[in-house]
Length: 84
Image 1: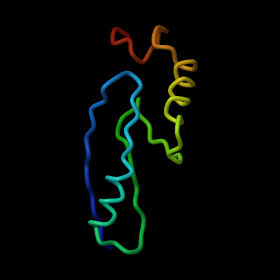
Image 2: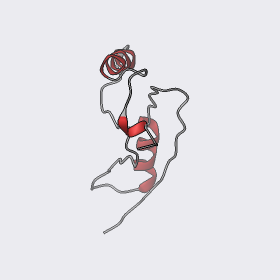
Image 3: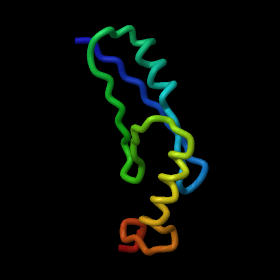
Image 4: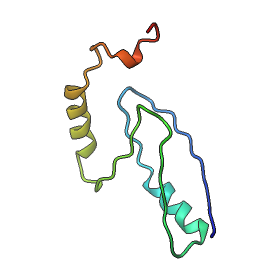
């Protein structure tokens, strides 16, 4: 069984940042020359996520507004408190 692995690092520019990795994933799939199998995208961080959605106008802004309501920046979060 053939395996190809690629590690990509991103640095966000702001608190709530969205990075479209579609082109890089497509390029990796093409460069791997694998014609049949699985492609897994994995994120190795607890406060980041992979979101799969069609790229329609306004989707990132809608999601950002929803997340700001759900998780306001000025609220106390235990997992951010390094004293406990």
